[in-house]
Image (cartoon, rainbow, N blue to C red; front, side):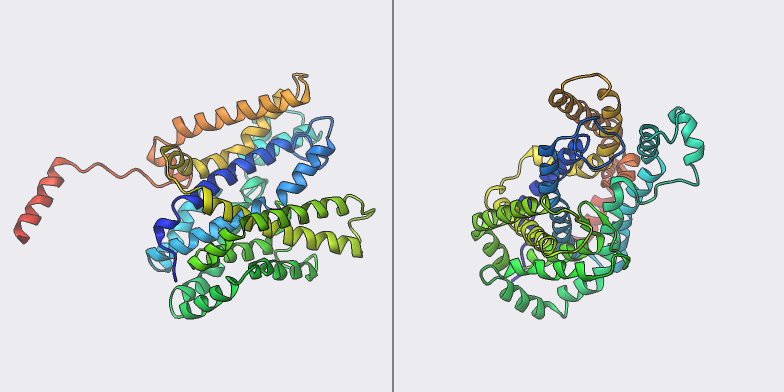
Length: 390
């Protein structure tokens, strides 16, 4: 039983907006955790480190699951040519725009704060272009891997929508039994057995790249059948309790491991708890969204359209604002609040007055162009054509 397109428009769009806001909050906290970054506060906080570990356990898996769900509906609209064109315009074009423009500021701030460059930003640009362009770096790695994995999965997903529909239906029926969906974390856990230098075993967002391919596929499968969604919705509170408990267990055990670079029983247990806990938290979030995020409002319509430009801008703006605010000597909590408030305001101004209102900028940032108004002469010619057919 396929899900009707109208069922997608609310909870998935709400979760997409909330997911991007979570990414924004996550990156705003990176000034204060222990891991190195382009710009850092001179003090890090264990509580922020816990928050980073917690949110990273499900944040990017959730984004890829939502993207996988979107693929299910995108495949209704045409063949490979239209699918590829849509992904190029939606993902590769904004990726190239970011790589050729503002990602240079992120690289400059890294070199500036790490003592690798002492000049101004404009003095830095000649050494950045063309040899050091950060084609897939920064936070825009998500766009590249979403494009790559969408193309890789296209034949399978198209088969699911066509001749393989019966197989997909049987698979959905099996996965819809109780908590069997939780077991979809198992193949992701097994990927840790791959050699560290295997293709796509690099990491970003807290997970190996290859794992996101599976999350993308799971998102497609979940929205393919209402039975699965009903089961996820029914188990939402169970999933939330189990997922949070597993993630909490992971954080507790991992922080007690002396050397996390050497495999040990404790490290394996922590990894298993994180993998299952992160996936089950994603299912809990989906279930809560299905149950409670059911209305459509003008705010959702506006925010959903702004998601991609907001994502493209957010890290560069956060780093630039943070670079200056960290020099003001404010108490750290107030400092963080000021960075978040100023950054959010700048991003929304950039979106509203530079991107949203102009078709060229909309296309460059992965949005659909405004439809051209129909001229009076065109209207008259269409009316004549209609009258001839009556």
